[in-house]
Image (tube, rainbow, N blue to C red; front, side, top):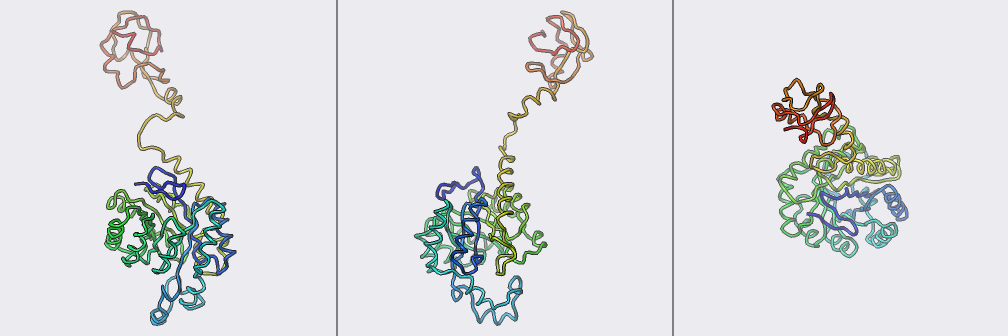
Length: 354
């Protein structure tokens, strides 16, 4: 099925929809958040996405302090997990300002909420919802977002196919407007992460959940994963966005900057043109080539009226003059007789044979 978001239709036969996830890259500065919206629009993004969470509603200070140390991408953080989340959170009061900024540049604003209050707060401001990968087994939150009746983007990083299936079934029972996104939730910017993207999972999703729109939520920099995902049927691409990968902060290192974001969009648009239609036919721009590179049947020597054709009297040569007999029909020509004199090299036509 297709889904409608503002002026854009998202579906298998429509252009890829690009989401710039600003996430924590606003660095606690509203004006900087607005700047990133404008830069994302200039780079070709269709939507700017934020994340609405309050540290006490998403992380347990006790839980992280008793893990025995910060791991994965959090290992490089200079502050505690709670401190980083507190600094990265955005006040609810920013929401109408960010939405207005998006409207000024003609792009969609939306956000991933991480608690019930945020889910309900966003309802009046967004045309769609996003659930991050970490919410895949929090079914009551997924159902609450789905119940808003708006397009729903769900990332599936760090989950099993059984967990994805449970989430999808719960959502589709409420809301058919689902975009299911393959994702790998490693945020270290390591080049080894390409070995773990598994975008072929999109084939599995297409088989298991026909009619669901596919997407890729990615945390790498190269173009290849995006182009591969689009080739496999993804029509939504989400990547983090920043103005500089050199800035300090939890999301800057693996984010796309304006230059490589613009290149990603440009190459994807070329890919969409190149993918074309599933039907095989002679394309408009190769019709002349079909004449000069293909062959037709021709007289191998001067042939007189009444002569009976043998294989030795027939050449198969370029060009394939329009109206001439195709080489595929050579056996049907053998045994017929010439209804007119044919000079050597003349193309054979059914009107000249009897």
